[in-house]
Length: 366
Image (tube, rainbow, N blue to C red; front, side, top):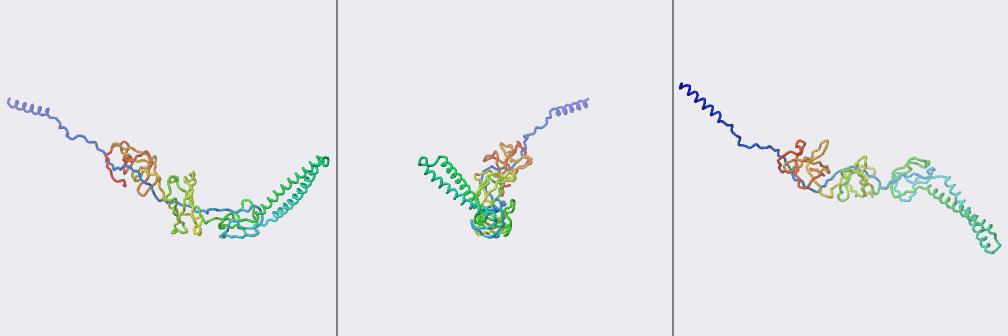
């Protein structure tokens, strides 16, 4: 009996101890984990850079000379490399029929002139006599007046024909349109010329001053050129660096190449630089106004978009931007940005938009 009472007392004590046991509460509060990213504060700065573009050197003036009349080259007074002056005779053309027509026109002019002067004299005499009543009939006066007017018209036509014939005769002598150098000669003495679609008999160029043309990509057409000049070299003289002054722009983007032609002038009095050569052109360009510049690592480029990651109130945002000039260690960007914006230095697609992050300011350079 006593043994049974002892067992019941032990069981009751164990049961009460089990009912009073409670699990211990954690004293540490649950902490939300956030990634830490390096950021920088966006600023504006002056954008300047040097870029190299290919260019083409062209003569300042170039003319292909074609004769206006058919005939044979009677005399050729120049050859390739000949320096010529404006108005200098380059070649003479032999065209006997032109000379014959010129002589015929001159004879007709003299004949019509004499006939007109005779009829004018007759009309003047009859007009004076008609002032006395009954001496000259009205019909006779009208006849002589009509004859004088007809002879006057013939005389004027003869003068025009003679002038035209003389002008055509002037085409027998081919002269230089400006000071320059002969760069092509495609005929010899005795060659028949004046045929349609034939090669020019001569080509003359003014190479004392050259045109340097550079096709500037569309992205660079909004920049300014430092000191309005460039430096360039050619394959013929890679160690010789020359200068060219900016003079004009095409004012339009070529749809096929997406470029705008910029033209520069090059002094070439000594003729050291040859037109037709390709040039390597160095341009010092800059923006007129300060721009936003960021490290290359701060911009993300995908197939669909180009963006940077901005942090606002511990939350990320993807901001689409357009890229401008690439500098040595950073790039120019355009978009809905403001000075002082907090941007991620090393941006990537894995850092999603609207993600909470902790920030740490660091250097802009990656």
